[in-house]
Length: 210
Image (cartoon, rainbow, N blue to C red; front, top):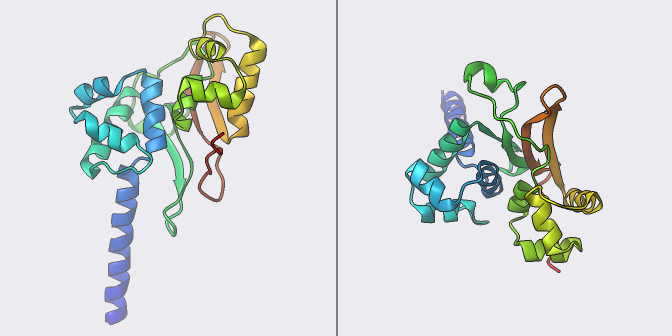
């Protein structure tokens, strides 16, 4: 009888643990989602009806916002058509491949929650990649060796050099970021655009400060 009680207790604990993991989206992924949506923290606060300081806390490296705030933010971004990515190790609680992207037409969730699929005119979101790293334009320019003006132009898809474009993409990939998205040749639009940390068996490590 005692063994049976312990089994039920373990299952109940596991369910609570999984529920918390589902609600508490990593700060990295929340920053990506906001970058993809092209919204400021103030705009998200107003639209999601949440205190802006809770967004600051949720997007910070410590992730110390209230659980209800994570739940609201997740629901808000998913309603926009953004999905969160990552694999959770139940034993350790570490996350591999954390990220976010616009929902892909081939995503299984598409069948359960039909929504208009978001498309992008560009298949690479450098803004989302910088949000994942959580660095300023000046810091990124310093670390990548690319002029700040060129980095800004690339992010805005304005007048930029393809050579610098390739260099910036290579830099992000060298520090462990993976770009996501697929194009439709007939419309020249891109689906599922986003970024994530390259999945590994352990939690990612940040590039060293220079």
